[in-house]
Image (tube, rainbow, N blue to C red):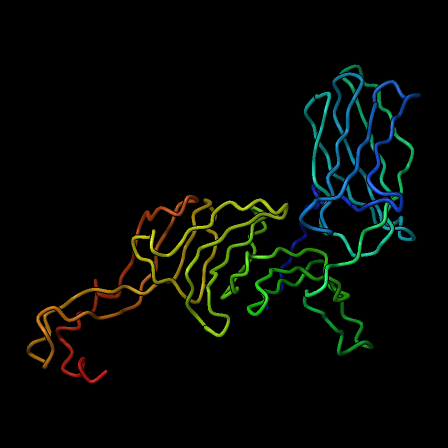
Amino acid sequence: MRIVGLLLIVGFLLSACQSEEGDKQMGESDNELIDIVKIQDDPDNVLRIDVEVTMKESATLKLVYWKDGNESVKRELVFDDQKQSWATKLILLEEQTKYWLKVYASNQNGMVEESKPFQFITKALPDGLMKFTNLMPDYTYTFNGYIHVGDKQQGTLYLINAEGKVVWYQPTDDLSVICSGFDPKTKTFQAILGFNPNESFTGEYIYVVDLYGNVKLKKYYAHFDNPYFHHDIQMLDNGDLVVVNQIRQSFDLTRWGGSSNEMVTGDGFSILDFSGNTKWTWSAFDFISPEDDPDIMGG
């Protein structure tokens, strides 16, 4: 479990959900800038909602939302380009919760227009997801961020808030989450996935997905130069990935009772670009040789 201090500049967070009446397309016929606001469910995830806004002329867009009964805490999603149509996803939402959404538009002449508020209610989480229970309900500590959890058995990534409520989830195609982390700069999760939920450290896939559910990288271990990754994967400041892996190399160990082509496994790590291509590898064998170890064949 990792605590993720997302202070996400939740600029792209927006609220979300489905109206009690189903998908909605709301015309703003009395407005001069805002034409149509369309809200519909993401077909793959109940905590992500698709929003489309059409303008009557090119304008910038600002979306403001808040949870019903908590208007003092509002979040904004701002688009500064002048465009006539916009499409985005609303994320980091609680299930079965009522939200209010307003749309603001501004044209090049300085006209600012505000829509009426729209009410939406999120759906219930699907069956089979992890349930989180607060075992210390009287404890008053809170934080402005999220806790990230990776589920090995069901193969799902989660974010939960300070109240223990799931606000984001992403199934990982029935693959076990061996380890995972979140990079707030790129707004992506990096994970090692595997076929065996009982495996503690090693996996078969490198996986990167963003908060909107867009899979940026999913690559099978056999397609890597140094494929035996384990324990940890993280995003570097420049967008590259660093992954711990095993290095398998053959050595002549006949002097210690082995063969002339004995395969030895050692530790290392690799730097990968965002496409999964190896840019640089560090190997313990560059500094320590098994050929110098008289106990090497003892295990």
